[in-house]
Image (cartoon, rainbow, N blue to C red; front, side, top):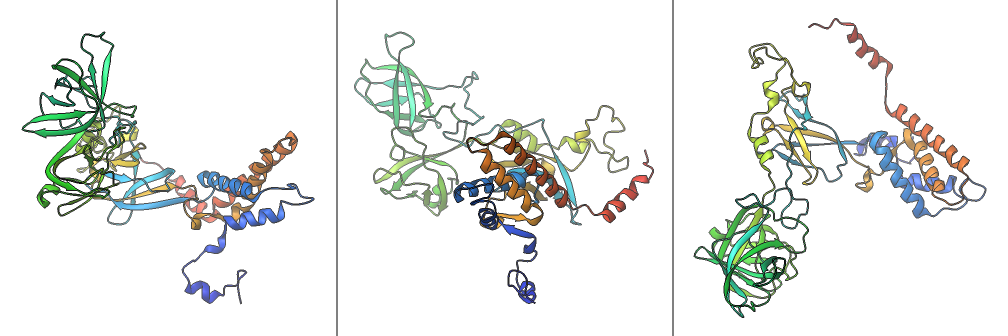
Length: 459
């Protein structure tokens, strides 16, 4: 005997799409809505399918957050970095837990007493780790020797955080203190512990030493703090190629994936971000996009990375979590507090570890005692990530129709207010019924749980 979709029972059990009958696709919802609710002598006389499709997707997303069973899970082994990248379709988490050897989940709690204000590097306007000089000022300054009619400026030392694309600001000689000259930096080389820059525009005053302040151009942000700089001499590159060839494989091995490749041939003069290293194979360094303006060999190329880890995050991940000092069990294993438990913050009265989410970087940061453990992230998606996810449980099918109908009619002009309010009430009732159905409350299971509530609680 065949099922309603024409599939036999044998075909169903031999297949892999088990349990699908409890769902209906979003495309099917839209088709049925257009047939039943739209047309002559119906509540919606005319509606475009694109409008219905938009409101259907919005309804599915909204219902996914608190009505449908849209919770997904991802399991990882926490690396030594103590970080986990958020899933691609992540909207919010429901719980984060680690799994012991028996497969039992231990719930972790978020900590609100720390954070990692790190950014993503060059040009990231949200970066919270900025460069500061010895005086604590957000300034990168150097003394340079300017020569009349020359575009090359020799600085007074080695400056590994000056890159092409920056702006060099110099006070004009003999002018008011508010008058400054701005020169785009189009070249940076360092030899013998001395950095030399080339600027766009020659010095038209008498030769002199001037204090130069460097800043990012076309980015409304402070200079990010440098993490690592690698200078390679004898480098070769070819026009419109994404490969930079180092003098040796040993030199190329010093470069890390994610570093910026900085050279005057790589950066446009308008200060766009430099290409990023995406792979290192032998002596070949592959970059993200071909901005090389010309061929060259035997030249110097700088590779630079910026801090993503704040001092707060470094301290948090390197120390024993505070939760481990607040154990609840009065035995030989859990009694480090020696009975002095007065004033304990309940949120730290557990030994499962803690975490916090850096929304800027899109990562979860874990406490040090979670390193190497298997962690499961249960999270909410909007059910719109892939075509296969765009399905609705049949318990919520009526709620979808009511949501679409209310959304379509409430956005139209000259709709009677009473009719819109009636549709809103019907939508609310349909969503409430869907929640009750999807709550999946079983009387026998609830009774079994409540039986344990009559036990005396020991203190």
